[in-house]
Length: 41
Ligand SMILES: [Zn+2]
Image 1 (cartoon, rainbow, N blue to C red):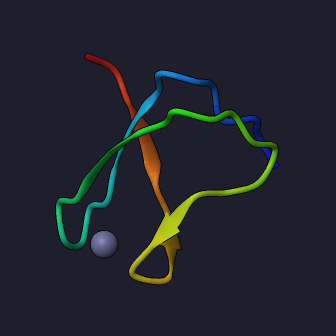
Image 2 (tube, rainbow, N blue to C red; image 1 turned 60 degrees about the vertical axis):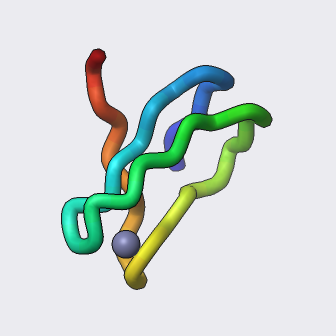
């Protein structure tokens, strides 16, 4: 488990949904059944 930082931008590689984290969590954020990958920039 990796912490998700506030302000991190995550993107789903399947449906290309982009998520901006507004509340940090120690859990995984997932979409389409897979964890979202952090994106730089
Ligand atoms: Zn998705």
